[in-house]
Length: 196
Image 1 (tube, rainbow, N blue to C red):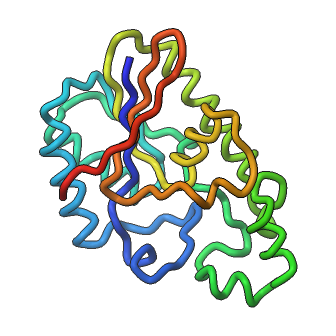
Image 2 (image 1 turned 135 degrees about the vertical axis):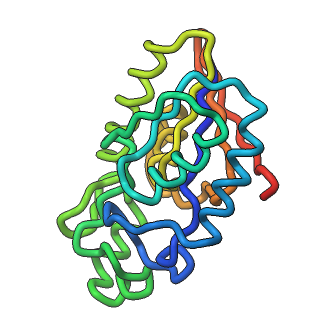
Image 3 (image 1 turned 90 degrees about the vertical axis):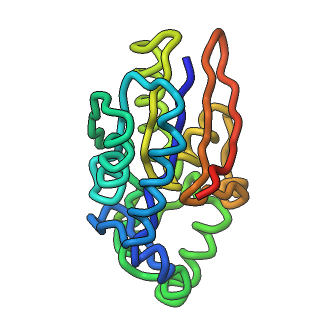
């Protein structure tokens, strides 16, 4: 089985560097265009289903892509972005000014430290790995598309590598990155950029 994982298209908050977390923000025009181009590129692959975060920006991306794939589409809460708690809706610069000490601790150990009222990356990784295990059992020898957010995509990679800690910040997932997880006896991860 192969699981193709992509990040939702761009939103205005992405463009402005504002952390969206679990706030429902729609795609902007660029995000819709990227989703359309991803749909065209991915239409060359035979998928049996799409799983998407239930948040608007991911769902909208999945729906646009599915206009080219025409397969069952399921929205899943476990694929939501990290809950940034009180830091939702502000930029990283504002986060660092609000509580410099906590922000520094979070940057140094996001695995164990969370934004106020939010999730740790450990929490995020545990929930996305539950999802990954469930679809790995359900689909054998078939291709599944997953539309999520940068945080959960990094968390899946971390979960499969049994990684923790600061290395989270070293993984870049753009709006045109496709992460492919192949599952036979074990998982193999590859990443590519689709030209959009």
